[in-house]
Length: 92
Image 1 (cartoon, rainbow, N blue to C red):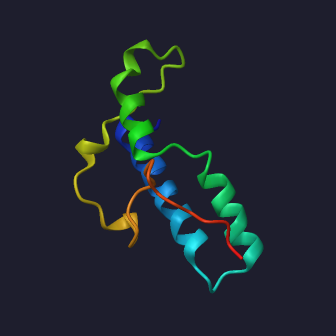
Image 2 (cartoon, one colour):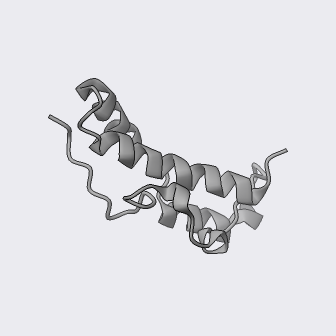
């Protein structure tokens, strides 16, 4: 069973991974475009924080931990977590 902390970590790592892929010019253009498109609809660290704050009213019962509880994490890549202000231009 996935814990709230594991669920939060997976989303944070996933967002950071999408940034890494989208900005990696060594990867094929189509892969970078797909990562950019997914990242535009993926929850940001601010979205995750909001989900954690409203977890008691979530009818799905999927609890989230606050990203602040995670502490520093080296698995966030060189660009860090996906944020509202993350700008991923359309790869060309």
